[in-house]
Length: 427
Image 1 (cartoon, rainbow, N blue to C red):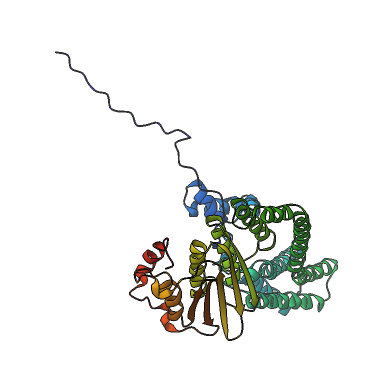
Image 2: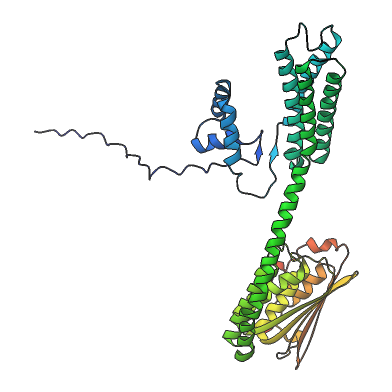
């Protein structure tokens, strides 16, 4: 009787295509110094201390680690996001520590009989003076160019570091100038003066960046204006002609209005914030309604108002606009008027009127989503309707809102259901 021995199953072979992709080589915005070591370690899948140790070893071996670190720092991008990079290590103050030590050495030499000549070798003097100037100037430049935009430090920190570095460099220059020095000593006097000039002139670099950014923004604005003028004379005119020829409620007119609104928003409203103002939000919502219903909605705003798109007034106005688009069709006008005391929104349509008392009690679209919502927010909602159309008037104070706005009534859970049932009649 033959026996068969089953061979152990081979593990699946890992190919290059089956390996998970490496994380992108980016620097963290919340880092110790620059985020280079953490980014490389994450990309290679090795501990961070190993990468940092490699940089230190290479720095000792002829300084190649410093050059490699600077190269990675220059060409490695930040991770995605809009947050300003923040560094946990106070680099500027750490650079000032060896500058203070070098200054103490110079003061010790100043108190002796020999001052940078005689028994003190010129090479040692050059190393001390050059190192002190390099650390002091590096601290001032670092604070000006890097710590100035750091949210954890800011302008006060930058000013303090710059003052300390300038004082150190000025004191060093005065010490060198008060002693009779040889030719080598006179050359050393120029070193702290060069460092002082570098710290002072570093303030011009942020100004230059601001001017360059302003120039780029001005060029973009000019290009956008030229493009807007060209599109207004061609594409926008064609879209307006389509709307006039096709009729207000036709499919072609609605698509033309939607494309015109998107094009105008792209040209003029590209920098609008996420939580925009009330008028911008209602215009965007009107564009969406025009795609879904055979209506034409005009939104007009007058006066100044700080009302945001995330408020209760915007929610009630959107509900009134949706109600008018569902049941009135045709032309709908939305008028927003802001003043110091309050904000008013009027939504008018020319459809068949209705009586609020005739609406079944189980439909809560107008009663709760509009009138009730405004009442809970500390405002008012009034509905006027007759055979010539319907007008919804919403008003809310411009000052502090009533605390009851955050209280949810027992009927809030039924608003969505009541709104969804408005297909047959006004809710």
